[in-house]
Image 1 (cartoon, rainbow over the protein chains, first blue to last red):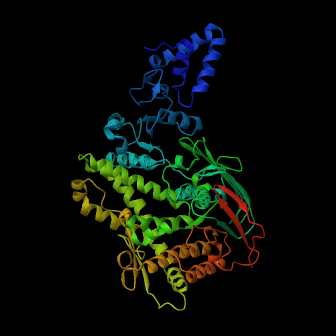
Image 2: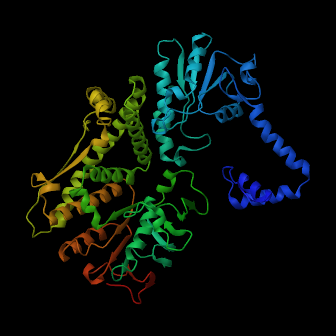
Image 3: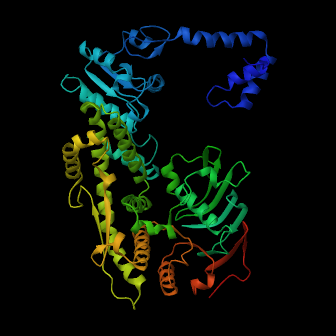
Length: 198
Length: 374
């Protein structure tokens, strides 16, 4: 058991956050002490409520306050097209673009034998179940453009062969607003690899 | 490409060093263990982001210091940039004109270098990995984007190896890794083949020039042993690798190792028809290494890249005649050359007004008065 005073205890707990070091944690703890008592209570309540209040959507596996999540529950969205991503944060990023009006499926990772993550550790079976229900016409594989993301996309594509579902991969390459002259070479190579017909 | 200012802090035994120079030849001289090679290593670190003799970055930081810093003003073909590298506990920090670079690729494009050091004898004598690394670096020097391709390929091989080691790899799970190995591997095999073909005439020419008029003509050959030949296109090489993976699939599972792919390539070097690794004399091996590096430089130059040349003490490697012929070959290039040596006289005459001699002693660096030869 620790004999630390509450200030030290709070500092130690705050330092567990990613990107927060010992000194920042101490500053935050002192700041909390100086605020009105409600501030600490509101923050503590929000943190406590975070885990209780958020849940995994039983359809798309996204993390949301409701099950089904707002996207799955939105009747105006196209149920025929599903965008497959690695993380819930990716859903937020694609939503922010406003370019996609279909549904999502969150895998919660990518296949990586080095980390002991095989296909069974991902939400692949629920995805297959959704496909089997017959409503899905197209899957957009939006896993990360790295080796693991590519391999995961390939694994899914092979799995879905013969189901009649159209499988596409999100394009990657030169960012918008970048002239080719100034794009870094790997982006150009990547864009060339993923070129499409016009 | 030229470094006109170099500032180092808390790097190895160098607490603080600053060199300002517009010279084409920067000669770092002093006795052994004074810090010459540490200085050259710092320049190499900026260009390669790794040391040529230390795999643990924290050991590059001066004892008792929290971080090391290397900063260089680099005059490139189009503009002048200030590159800064900091080695902090557990991480490194890069800045280009005080701004973090957008990608590693963009960093590498700003400063390229070719290193000559005694350890490179391993390219001839060592395991195939050493020769693949040489080829990969030669490709990288002309196209930095290759770095990412090579890293992705290595990652795919590691992932497949991890899967094989579980002893329960299902074909459907292996397939995506095999696909990555085939697709990325075919591009690597092709790039390597093209590089060997491009290097060959330069290696032969440099080898003949290094050997000098007195030496008997030595026949040098280099050939890439790989699944894909250069005469084949990308899809044909991919098919070959795919077929080989199918053929060795059972053995790969049994041994739990990735047996097929360009990570098994070898650049075969021959001198007078015999395998150089085993049969070349020490002199032949040294000449061949320098010929390979000079060829790397020639190829880079033919693609419009003028890398910095870093030469770590070759005094013990070459006799006087070869050393001076080697320097004459470097002089014929426009690149800036950084050389460490215990004995500047050994270098022979350098182009008038183009050399500066910096003295390195006990971690201190200073410009020698009247440091020009002509």
